[in-house]
Image (cartoon, rainbow, N blue to C red; front, top):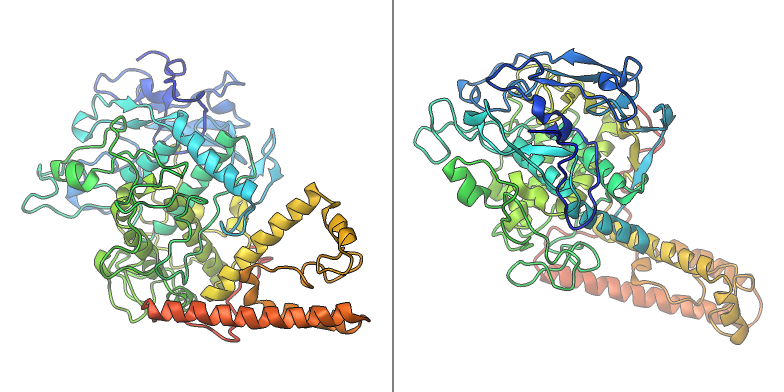
Length: 596
């Protein structure tokens, strides 16, 4: 096959090497196991660029034989190339030392940086509606660049029948992650008895990333790998994947606008006014073509443009409510037997994944809740779980799912019920995360996010009006602060030109933006304490300006209350009977200083 380090495919922009962990690095595929039994066959222990030693030498790692993890399994999985991962392809890999990581031990573990990987780092994932315009732009530009740059990994393009002569293809950084999710969740291409999906007697296959205990650790590792890839592509080591807090949004997709991840046309296509209007998909014909025919996805085939039809799925037109989300924190057991989509309460995992409701009723995909409900709510691409990562909304959705789990983990403090054995293949604590390479287990991703180098700006699970208002208000304040920093003389000039007006300088008005300033609508929910502080400050001042401020503030309060009632009335008329105004309710919040 030649030296694959040199065989670079030119995309729209220059290629970017991103050392994430799944499928196989290009530098190793000439050593993949073959029927010829070559001496180097099955060994993937490359030397990093700055070293001539395999795995970087003893200070970085060692080349070791891959341990075959024995798991109980149905006979039908034995002819699937994911079974006994990755022994169908490699039997040696780099086992890194200390805080080193990566297929050649040249990377740092998540949460560490520096030339020797000794510096502890913690990044913060934030609400997508609270980040600044620049941060949002950086995130979207990183997504677009990832779609146009080549991954350092290649993906399998053959099925088990051809495992003796496997073929691989190049893929973009973004599509690489789409393929990894597809590969873990897809049906086996051919089963032991030769049956394929749709045949009589076909046995339902295993999903290595869903419907079992590994749902949480698999996606946690997946999100970390995707986030690191974006950081490298963008050249911004502190860039994170923001979360979309969909709790209580009702029928509204608040990220389906051109400001965020693209508005939708009536046919589901992305608006021409969005950067994502020409976003192509791969493997999106999974259920219509690939699955029925028992074929594996060809990543070089464009399967059409990205489409969404939010709130069009019969019976699942609403996003999860506050009540549904808050119920997670009444469950104190991670999972229970049989550790799959039929696990009953108190299985927190099956509830969060979406196959169980608050009344302990098992749910199908037609009546799902929580995580699965969000997927199905979008119809089209997001509704096809194996290929749902085609849509960038997948990642802001799963960032929120991970946040909800982090809050649960910090509250409960343990995942002691995670099964050592008894779960399906790939879902036990010691099972390898498929298709990670080099190898890591589910047990490696059961701790709090602090140990993995990230946290969240808030663990609050708040009622709709309160949380949405706070997020939007935070963003407005961030933008105002940026504007003031760029033009520090602006407010003073305005005050000088109109000394008796509302826009007085900070020196003349210690209350700042509260007194006499035009406030965003989102302040309405929190206007009570803000108004109280402002009135007290105004009462202590002399002259007509203070009285004018009080009258103005009272007017704002009244208008805000009226606006709030109008919004609630519209939601009720829209039929979202689950939406509630939790007057005086204290939102669930986990102490952000807690560390496991």
